[in-house]
Length: 598
Image (cartoon, rainbow, N blue to C red; front, side, top):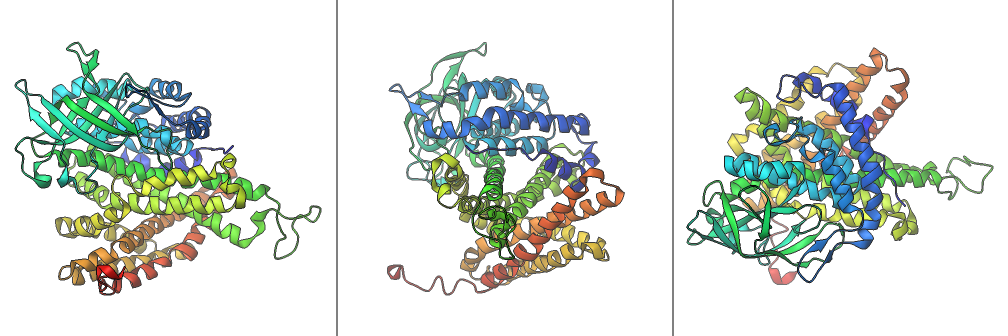
């Protein structure tokens, strides 16, 4: 059976020493989250993830969810009790608005806890994760009446939430949505239609499920200009706030799928269900994108989480598995063979995964801090700059971390040889679960197009120029530090490749848009490498500063980070030049063939 240990010390090092968490103490909620409290929260979250959530991962995958004749869905054994513990522990309201029962702590802490929960049991973590996205959308776009009606119970975990976008004929192209909303005399709407692939669409964990549903009001314009967002509870809500009867919302069927089997992926039928408009008519996509962006960061965390838990189990196996002899001679001469960890190619794989995990964690937390600043700073320019960075990094995180996270689960599975293919060891579940992260919340090809087509040119390139400026400033400030040369040199080369690729798009994509489409995925991964390289350079500087100040018994632990960082710079960062070369070939060859030639 696989195991998991939450990387609390790594998280604390990033927050305290790399990202200078304490410099944000003037922001709302940060003063309350003292270093001691932050550590206590992370350790308690780790304890819950390791002790309660992780033991249900494999059994939940095997059992799956079941649907009854009446359309109600049951989760696997132990899930309801675990979810009750999650809610009673206040984990769902850690960063939520205190006016509605939340604790108001920095969202960066929730991001760290989400990694632990998702590594422990990705399918379980999706239930509160989707609720968090619905809470965010209602907080920003709901009326005061809607907030008062829904948020307290959702934050408490008594009610859960979902997002309903996809329809049988319509995935990414939301302009094709057919679900109808018919206005009623009392200001409500009757919602009718079918949604598919709805994660956590029905279950037995909470007393009510609050669905956020995209639909088209009768007579609304065609395309994306005519889409509105509605809040549609599974069960009606009485005037006193208690739960009433059925609201015409049912699970038509459960999807049979590759992974995340203990999360109920539902076909949802809305049969004249009563719903209420969120925000303005025909402006639903703006409100829904709040939830989608929240979800995309959450999916990026999933990519890291599966990479991390797969790595931990692969390392344990590589230390244990006796097979062959080291190329430089026996390391265990008193035994028939050496552990496979002595082999360079095994180390290449494991170090590549670990080097990614540490940089990806840093990049996620760095971005989450920008999210906190964008919502909590009192300075308008500061808020705008952080909001720009969040928007720029969201597709990079979602696309790169899930692409690479999945590849890492496959590589970790490979360490087990044939055992990795056997259910007992748990590695094949990590592969199956990680695969969906590349697909939902906008497939990764769409993330790449969003980055190149929307985020780069937004506001005259303000966000990307800010990123270039920040990395460039770091390089300038540390250019004379010879101890950092192994990090700043490769980072400088990678940044130059990214700047050249950006300029190439500026010169070649306007006249021929296919050039942007042809190079978008390479650009996204190029950007991700530079982002992670920047994080490794910051980590390396923090490590050196801490050792110079006296690290005590942590010195060896810190020096290990330098080795993994050096591996990233030597073995992974040079890929930026390959991405640039591919981008620069343009679209001519790939667009030259007629359809019948494929």
